[in-house]
Length: 215
Length: 215
DNA sequence: CACTATTGTGAGCAATTACTCAGGTCCCGC
DNA sequence: GCGGGACCTGAGTAATTGCTCACAATAGTG
Image (cartoon, each protein chain N blue to C red):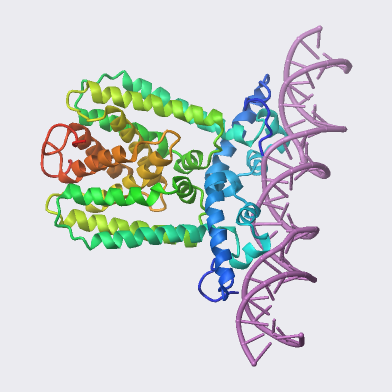
């Protein structure tokens, strides 16, 4: 188990080229092993074996097993954050459905390369404070974006903006995870269409009244 | 080997009252331990300790650790199935929103007693064939119900009935799990309202056209 | 009570796993 | 080429865990 060493930072900074190469081999191998075996059964020895390095080398760059997964997840979140920031620049002046489609497609693209790994990272990751804080900040950023979208876009309404935003963010994230990595996965294009339809109708208001459901 | 019932059945049928009592103590303790520590860290010795029985007794009723969780999940699914069957009898002649509200409320009620345990069972359960088959049958039953609902109810439409049904089922199940067991849980009543609003608008058709979104 | 079937006990085994360390190999500046 | 640091090695360690088994206690029956 985790010995309470301070921090999950890499133990050493690489000074030579081969060191950096070793780091990347470890990460690539870990991604593959975690995706195939899950977190618990994805042992450090297996990772080292797949990376074709010795187990000792692995522990020169990562103080413990958790740290490897933390770095994998951090990289994933960073990519997502950057893409989201880029998208936010586009301005909310397009039709609501287009904005939502962009949002959904971003989530899909971000998960299509390795759904199994993502599933492992989300579901089986150790609940370390560091990881919780990272994911929580990510969620907050996304929620803030959607809330602003709901508030600013002329086509959208919601009774409770905060809860609606959280609902939208969670819906997209969870459904993409689940239905892509399911044993009987859905066609991503169809999933995108239905998700966009559902969310657009939700935010644009129902067929009867204009405001959201009565309290 | 044991008879064709499957490998995870209890090893012996209780013949005395105290045996049945022991079984229930094991289950109750397991539910508590799994909810508190997760599946991997919820060791069999810990379960036995909490049940105040010896580890040997535990293994007289369950052939291995997985079997305990399988029975817990089976019981949960059975309750859900029974409630769903009861609901299906009510007939689809009520307004669409009422039917959906009944569906959402059922899912909520079914998860409010022990969200943490449910989360562990759904996310961290071992992917044994037996378990996969059980959950898969449960999902299929629910999906069939929703599909029938969409097809039969006069207020509802959908371009692709199958995918819409799967979307609805997964949305409810996942959001209830996630947002109730989250570190910052939502108020169940509000969640219910927003979910009902979203799904009703989705199935009743958008504010513009009547048919579902373009292909 | 005597006898048997059922139920309960818990020390300990076998397997697994995260992680260490003593000592090797390789690279680079001088 | 040579000294020192960066990098790599992999058998071994300590700890944990699922699970067994020889035995003890209890309940039911005559």
